[in-house]
Amino acid sequence: MTTAAATYEIAAGGPIHRFERVIRLTRGAEQDWLRRAVAIGALVHLPLLLFAVGTRLFTGAWPFVVQELSTHARALVAIPLLLFAQRLVDDRARGFGEYLITSGIAQPVEAAYHATVARSTRLRDSLITEIALVAVTIVSLFASGTYLGGRELVTWASLPAIVVFRFLLFHWLWRWVLWIGFLWRISRLPLALRSTHPDRLAGLGPALGPSYAFAAVVAGCAAMISGGWIDQMLYAGRPVSTFYDVAVTFVVIAVIVAYAPACVFIGVLYRVRKSGLVHYGSLAQRYVAAFDTRWVDARGDAALGAADISGLADLGGTYSVIPETRVLPGSRRLLRVIVAAALVPMLPLAMIAVGFVSLLEQLGDMLF
Image (cartoon, rainbow, N blue to C red; front, side, top):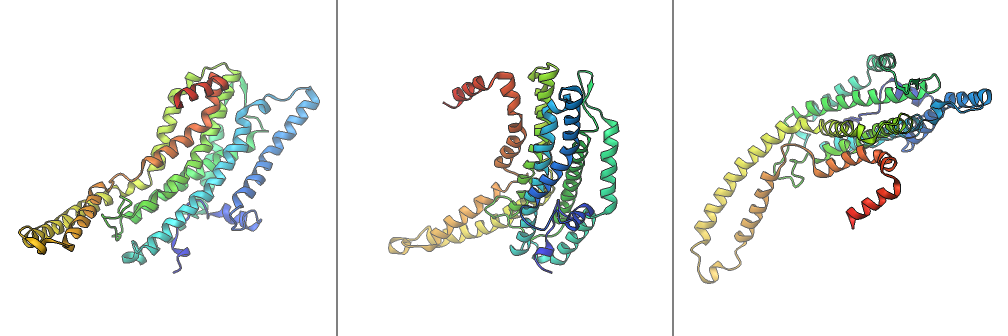
């Protein structure tokens, strides 16, 4: 089996993906996401454009739905980001799969690894699942309504963008669950992990790649949320402080969801670190005992130029890596990336509430 066949892609695959290839919306190129974003953006904006122009011609005023920032944030920012995230996440998922093979981590269980990839791919490409996601999207339209100041915002003109955004969001959540399941099955295999690996994750560092790329999904959701909050501030007079608790909750949930896939390796990393401490601790004890026997009582020229001294220092450096192996996969950098993706789209809220000039002055005071 080739390396390409041994990798698992998170967002690609499924009936919709195959349909897009049939109509040549996707061609396996790096810019497929841009082509899809432009095509889908035009599709969901056309009804809104017709509705807005028609309302303007007949009433002399633009409809309220066109004035909402959330309407444009959904179609022009959120949906493209969710589509762009598919490319980012899949690039890193493929990289992780190739790494498992080329690094030799999955070599002892290569047949079982290939079977895991095949099983996860079948679940991902299920037609029933895609139909269920469409059904959930439709049900969600009837189960929730968006109102502001007594005026209904969900009109037939903005409905296509709402449907596409919700479907993509549900699609992402389901594919992320499948990714967690895939990594969990991988974690059950006896992988050739090393407690002395310099990434402090026993060699599983690349498993965090898709979590970094998931920041694009977080940013898309944050842009949609921020647009809705700005509408409420502008048209319903709600203060920005109303959204503080929800914003904090959103950031916490985003971090948990991004970290969730790699957390399946907690047990594995604990066992690898524990085993490394035992085995390398025993090796260090034997080495130190032999070193003391040979060199502690050495005198004169016999004590000079001992390669064993350098070896002892190297052994100490190697052993010091083991206690630093993290049982909880992740890093401060990943935390910063996810938090930034959640908060940066909300900066317009602060600009409206505080004022752009005042905000710049406050930032300048903090920095300088």
